Image (cartoon, rainbow, N blue to C red; front, side):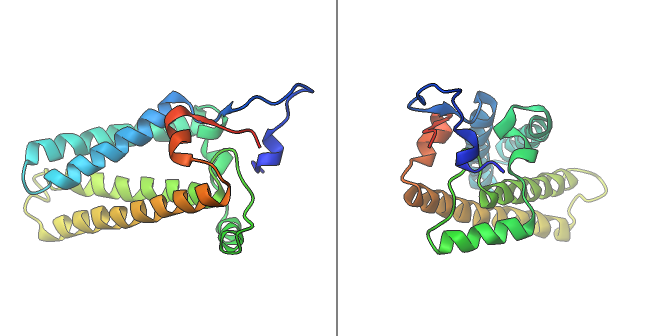
Length: 187
């Protein structure tokens, strides 16, 4: 388990004011993905070449993040934060009661959100690519599925931001700042 108490071992030394949690790749990926998705969403009907370039860049970032989720440092690995549905529901129940444990890396709900966003974005990228092929050129259903994936992603982003705000409040820490600096307080 990666609850905070499991990650505060200091070998008998006084704990530092902060510890490194998210590496540079995870942070650059996170903010680049957010910016590129916003760019793609904003240019979907207006500037097709920018929309398509943003989509291909997102697809490349997703591929890199999946690899990094398998071989990257501890808190970047899926094995560190992907939990069973039962664990996610138990965590959400604890959040509702304002007694959720603090995690140094992603909590179970955050891990579920990472997976959900990756899946939605893969669906968005795949259907976007399909629309550029001869087989699916002009297929209205592919465009509708593409738009549905994009709109579901927007919904997930809203839930993600609300979750960050709730966790920041519940544990008295600025998670947005932590995703910029990569550092959190150890306990």
